[in-house]
Amino acid sequence: GEIFPRVLRVVGMLACMAGCAFSTDHIQIDYTPGAAAPVAGAADAKVQVSVVDHRDGPKDKVSNKVNGYGMDTAPILANNDVDAALAQAIEAELKARGFVLAAGQAQVGVDLNRFYSQFHNGFLSGSADADCLLHVTAKNTGGAVIFERGVLGKGKVENLQLASGDNAKIALDGALKDAVGQLMADQAFIAALLKANAATTSRVAAPHAPTS
Image 1: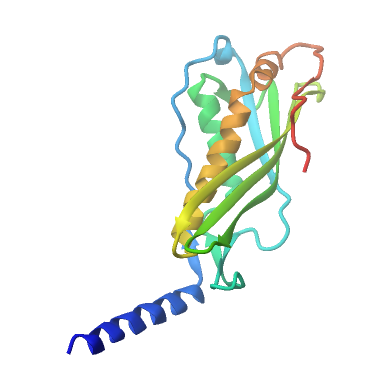
Image 2: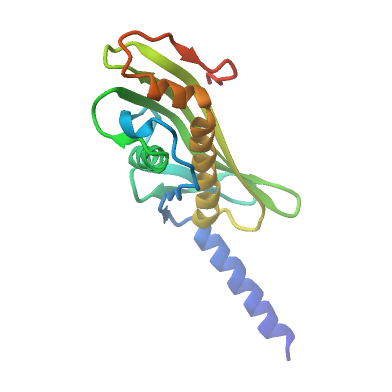
C-alpha cells in the first residue's frame, strides 16, 4: 500500500524538477560592503566612479539553467542593472574608507567585460562557477592615467542538486565580492586616488593584472 504513494511522490518531484529547468529565474545581484578602516587623507580626495558594460548579449542574462546532460534549458536574469550594482559596490567601499564621492580629482573608469555563472554537472552533484572580469583605470584632473589593472573575481558553489537562480546568485554575488575586494586591497589603487589632485603624477600599474 505504501509503494504506490511513494512512486507518485517521486514522479511528482521529477516532474517539478523538469518543469523548473525550463522556467526563467529572476534574481537580484546584491553586495554587502565589508568592514574597512578610514584611509588617511581620503576625506580630501574626491572620486567619481563610472562603469561601462561591454558584455555581449542581453545585459540582464547572468546564467543559464542546464539539464542532466549539461545542455542549456532556460535563462537566469538579473532584476537589477549589473553595471549599476558594480558601481554602487565600488562606491560603497570607497565611502567606507572616507573618500568623497563627487566629481573632482579622481575619475575611476571600470569596464565590465564578463559577469556570468556557469553550471557544471558532476557524478553525484554539480557546481556553479561565476566570474567577474573588470578592467579598471583611474585618471587625474588632467586626464592622465595614474592607475590601471585587470581584475578577475571568482565565486563558486559546490554540491548542488539544482541549477537554479538561487544557486547562481550565490556564485555571482561571491564573484562580485571577490572582484571589488581585490581592487580595494590594491594599495596602488588607493595611493593613486590620494595623489590624483597632483599636477603631474606617474602611472601606477599592478604587474599581476589579468588581461582577459
